[in-house]
Image 1 (cartoon, rainbow, N blue to C red):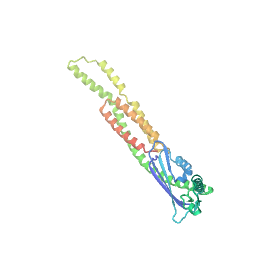
Image 2: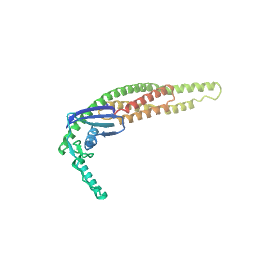
Image 3: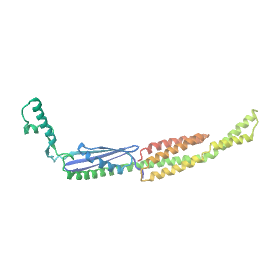
Length: 299
């Protein structure tokens, strides 16, 4: 089964007086790039969450958003920010020593200063033993959102694979037509050349030389031989179909095969001195370009 790199997933849960919502969005990318956006005080969990994403998704730019909202019926207790209090007291002593200002800040004064009292919010203020519980529930929420994302990527991947298989079928049809046309290239060239030489001989331009005609046709047959290219194309079609059925990430391998198919088709185009073959080459290149655009979405 092929997987698209485009998808969206989300999950939500309630824990510790908060409603936590996780959203994951993924788009095309050459590699696996994970961008984590968590509340500043939860950056402690970023590494473990990133590893979970990387273990499940192999390609794409993945944006993970973790948002928290305090429950309406929950009032978080306020605690003393001791580091800030010490900084204010040191500043008061400095004012007295250097500038001779008198007076000590009272408790009421201190409580009115910014950031002296803070809510017990985030990992920096929760007890150490609760960090493991928060890590567990965040991981569970992330895995649930990832499952939702993977389901969407799988559905999109089925559509992509179906479209690609249809286009490969079209390539195989053109390939069959090329196989039928290939033997006629030399005979058509021989007939046209013989007719032209006969006309020129009748006009008295030069004597007809059957031996030189045979040599010219032999060289043309060698230059225009496309059997190897057609054989390799058939192999690439089969490999592409097998990749589309694989459960492993196949986007890069498929991209390589598309490049190889383009190379073979270009070679056929440069060798073919035949209008019908050239028309098939143009159609093949158009289909391959559409395949390349679609394959860019596959993981």
